[in-house]
Image (cartoon, rainbow, N blue to C red):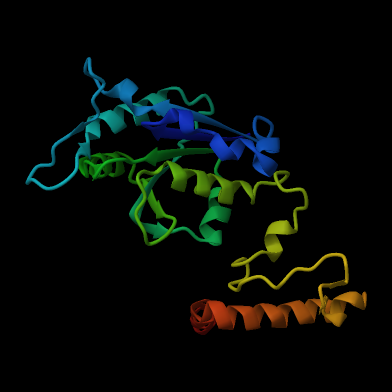
Length: 242
């Protein structure tokens, strides 16, 4: 069973929306999550986890020893015995892609660090990565924008990973035909009735000829991608040339 451990100041946010729909149906059967409150490792009577930044500036910084104590707690209580994959959700991280999500789906234990305030003391990462040179903290971003904290990105990451875990989706081929899976956006979709308010379903989709339908959808996907996200086609072209 896949296990996610979330280090957060707001453990009540989990599992949140992940407890619904396909991920919710698989919860506690194919995956589980444990949200750990960082304030439990504050080490002071007021449970304060942050302090002012050296050098001045806006915002507060989460103390390195707080997060490290939480990570050590996770390691000490890891019944599986394997080294967890530790991920920090941050705008400075590598952009999440389907390839990354698919690779992470093979990891049994994943620990997610959800930052808040201005940042986490950089020395946490320097120390941890020095001690775990073969398995350093992976920093990931879900987009070029800033949110109030890492909790929502953590949920997005978990959802994207679970879609690659066998048994989570109703049909295993579902994720193979989605947008970005082959470097392009997805083709349009239609259902009954065949005509609605003067708009008809493309004739090819009504033929029952699977070869023609496949070719039609591939061409439609190229057209949509070229119109809405031409950068994806260029990125694919560069990959082929490489």
